[in-house]
Amino acid sequence: MADTQPRYRITVTHGSTPLGSIDLELMPDVAPKHVANFESLAAEGFYNGTAFHRVIPGFMIQGGDPNSKSKPRESWGTGDPSLTRVPAEFNSTPHARGILSAARTSDPNSATSQFFICVEDSPWLDGQYTVYGKVISGMDVADAIVAAPRDGRDNPLEKIEMSIEKIA
Image (cartoon, rainbow, N blue to C red; front, side):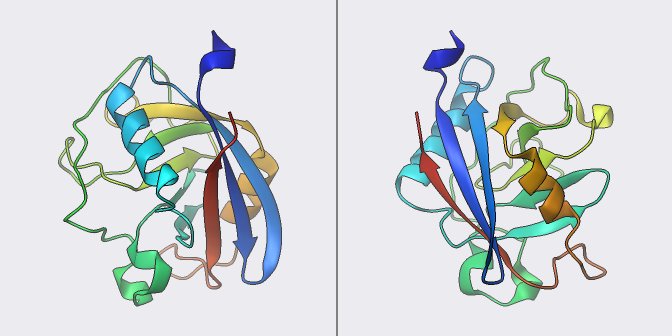
């Protein structure tokens, strides 16, 4: 069954330095709407040029905001209200290290393009945020991202940019 799950590669650069890649396996069986949204956005190249705009050691790395492509840093993380909102698909998958989950506002049904990857187990998120994938390789790259120097808003001082492509 695992061989039929969609897989994606996030290729990451920090400034002009390549950091490597993070390979994801999506879970359409537990969150079909979130997987479909991610796949649709990735297919159109939406994520290419976006940043990991929020990094919190001991917790997670967050990215996927279109504002992080070319808008002022102050707007990174605020999202684009015109994007399709994906309803919550809470499931029993725990927010363990390496889990891919949907970022959102305080409204459980407000997820759009942004996602986060847990760099440590985060059980307080279980049943509150939609898990829809997991890292299958490249957690060393996620660890490098979360260790980047950051400002008081947890925004890396130098842009950590991504591109996403389907690999299977």
